[in-house]
Each structure stands twice: as structure tokens, then as C-alpha cells.
Image 1 (tube, rainbow, N blue to C red):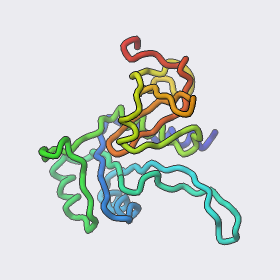
Image 2 (cartoon, one colour):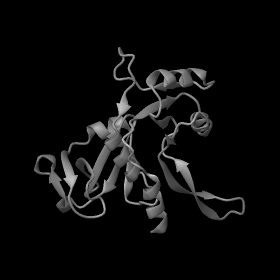
Image 3 (tube, helix red, strand yellow):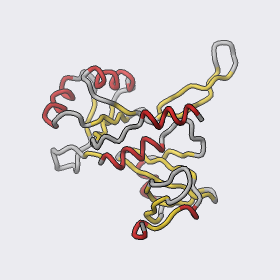
Length: 189
């Protein structure tokens, strides 16, 4: 419980939007460090997995959920960020608003704040989805009124006879188990 509280305390909603950076390299940690060295905050969704240690015993380690995405907080102007991206030796691409557009697609701070909260590695009743899988899930837009997810919004979807709150950002979606009785349609806020 203390680790969950510590994680939540580190997720700050400061009103800043986020870039989604797609990687064409397996060096995700190096790309994250590159942006961090340039004074930019990064986020990579992670989850605990069991691996066999050197002694043959299982141990839990944090691993990235996806290997081809890094989210970077917009703390500099687009031109400055573009210059930083051009300086990298890694093959990366910042998601754009559309294929024809040169403007970066920014993830609004509210959406990214809730997404980061939902990515807490201590939460076990959670599923990660690709963007395509998330789009295929039908569900109504809801606001959670009660329980530990109170105040969060997303789509209420059903999977394996259970209800989940689905939150999507470019490149990935996350679903957290929720009781449908805790949710109200968005227009009833």
C-alpha cells in the first residue's frame, strides 16, 4: 500500500501536455536517458514480471509494457523539442496530428495524468492494449463516481465477463477493473 501511495505522489498534474515518441530501435532506456539528460521528463508504462534469477529462483522485476514508445512532457517550445529530437543518434519519430500535418500530436495533461495513474505497476487487475485493440472495444464514456478510481473518466468496456475502465493515449491503451455500479455516463457528471 505504501508503494502505491508513493507512486501516486510522484504522478503530478502540472497542466503540461505530452508528446508520444515512437522508437525504431530496441534501446528504449537509452532514448529515455537522452531526453532526461536534456532536462525533459519521460514516462514509460511498466509492469512487474516474474523472471528467473541467476540462482534459479523467481524474482519480480519492472519491465516496459511496450518497447517502442516513450512519452515526453512538453516543457519546452515545439521548435526547441524538434531540435532535441534532431540531435539524437537514435531512429525515432514524434507522433503527428495527421500524416499530412507537421504539427506534433500533443496528449492533453488531464488524459495523460489519468493514464499515468492507471499505469501504477502495483495495480494487478489491469490490461494493456494496442491502439487497434482499444479502438475495437465498444463502450460508453463514463465518469467514476465512487471507489478508488473516483474522478477518472474513460470508456466502460466488458472483457472476460468483467468491467474495465479503458483509457487510451496514442500508441497504447490501459484497462483497470472497475465495478460498473461506480460509473455514471459522462453527461450526468
